[in-house]
Image (cartoon, rainbow, N blue to C red):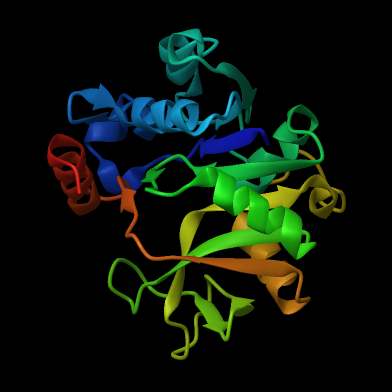
Length: 232
């Protein structure tokens, strides 16, 4: 089983005032910190090794989760330090803990998905990266993936085209070699790497059909709470 990196270092400004004193990962959803739902899912899927990339108020996450033993996991941490490194910079800093290949999971997303199927697809595709995608049609956020006849043609978060109907679902797999050329301790966004991989034809698309749940906004938080209270 591949290790899993959880990106949980952002400022979460869209969730203020909730996140003025706690990090987004610890926001209560249906009576529990959101990250607890993620860790339970990883345990249930059979994944054991987790690296949480922290930044803003990251010490609170480590105090709450510890070594992950109460979840049946082995949890370690990679801290940004005094300067936030962004999703890409945080992953670069954590790379030495993650080995050759690893999952990347956004810290504000819960995904009803079979991780093992995704891992198998990655092994079979032979590409540097794999991104799970959902036909979004701009419903939950701006669509940012051009996917046609089973091929991921372009991912572009900063300048999405009107032809794009899919969105990054929030779970990916990467080979650590794609991080080699990035300098350490620099702030950069993981979307830049995904964009580059897509233009090189080195990013596999894995289409899923169940919606994701996220707590990046107050509206998303309310929907996630409803999901965990009542199920799908």
